[in-house]
Amino acid sequence: AQSVTQLGSHVSVSEGALVLLRCNYSSSVPPYLFWYVQYPNQGLQLLLKYTSAATLVKGINGFEAEFKKSETSFHLTKPSAHMSDAAEYFCAVTPNNNDMRFGAGTRLTVKP
Amino acid sequence: GAVVSQHPSRVICKSGTSVKIECRSLDFQATTMFWYRQFPKQSLMLMATSNEGSKATYEQGVEKDKFLINHASLTLSTLTVTSAHPEDSSFYICSANGGPRTQYFGPGTRLLVL
Image 1 (cartoon, rainbow over the protein chains, first blue to last red):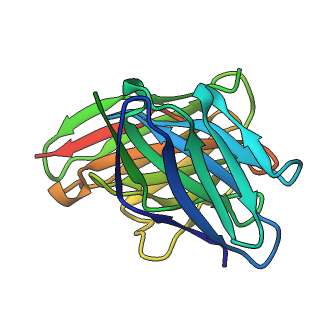
Image 2 (cartoon, chains in turn purple, yellow; image 1 turned 180 degrees about the horizontal axis):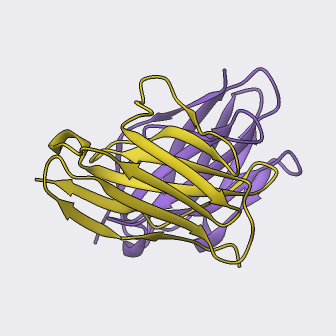
C-alpha cells in the first residue's frame, strides 16, 4: 500500500532562512505525490504535485520539491521563509485514481 | 476554476441531533467526492468515498449508519452526522475528483457537539 511519512511534526525557522520539510514515500508503483498547506480553520491548498513529468517541481509561493527515487523522498523547500508561510503542511500520495493518503503533517513556525 | 464549497462552515448542535453538511463542486462535475475528518493537530483521515448515483464506500472503522452520505448529483454530496455526540466534534473536509489523481478540497466544516 502506498503511504507517506513526514519527519518532524514541528519545524521552526527564522524569517529569511531556508525551509525544509521532509516527506518520504512508500510505493510499489510510480507514485503521484502532493504537498498541501493548511492555514488555521481552513481547507487545504495545493502547493505542488509530482506526476512523473519532471523530478523538480515548482509550486506556488516560492515552494518547490524534488522527487528522488533513490531516496524515496519528496522534500519541500523554500529558499527564504516569510512570516506568512507559518502553517501546517501535508504531504500526500494517491494510491490510485481515487482517494488520497496524507502524512501526519508538519507545523511550520517562522520566527521574526 | 475548480472550486469546491462546503456549507455550513461552522455548526454547533446539541447532543442527539443530526447535522447535514453539503459539499458542492461549483464549476465542474465530480462523479466522485471524498469525505475526510480531521481532529485538532492531526492529519486528515479518509472517512468515505462518495460516488454519484451509488452507495458510498466507507473506510474501515467508520460507521455507515452514523455518517450518512448521499451523492445525488454530479455537483453535490452530503454528509449527515446522525445522533451526534461530543466525540463527533471535528473538522470535516470534502474533496471532489477533478481529473486523474486530482482532488479539489473544500474549505471545511467545523462541527461542535455540545
